[in-house]
Length: 189
Image (cartoon, rainbow, N blue to C red; front, side, top):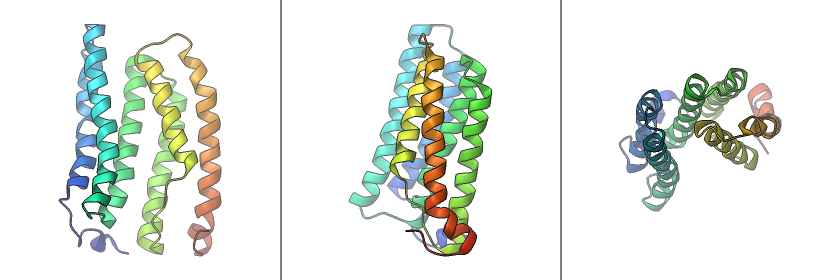
């Protein structure tokens, strides 16, 4: 598949717009954190923004299947939007809530590598990477840890070791599944 082929199918689907709206909510999250003079109000606004992001993440895939709007662009756009939200959210937490910078950098590097690797698989090998349980569990751990730092819960630093364990497991699982395809050209099993 070529980049041109990604854009030959339907582009402006409900699902793709929902994926983009998730990315466009990042500035709202920044504004909320940067202007957090009233902690109670910040919590409400943040909860609304997070609920919007989670809902659009669920709905984009659900509606793509339900409305028969699954497109190659959408299948690539959804995880890229997720990665942008995760990485930007973590760096906002680094700046505003003392999330460990080195953990945010590790996760950002993994997300960039996953995006580049996924793009390579799709464009050069015509293989669309599929999420696995490690990836889904990893996103859950990142979300849990982020919530602990966002709302400055006690013992929030205790969320980092399990996050890193799941993070390492995800790297191993994806490497095992797609490493052969990237380096040797064979299809994943």
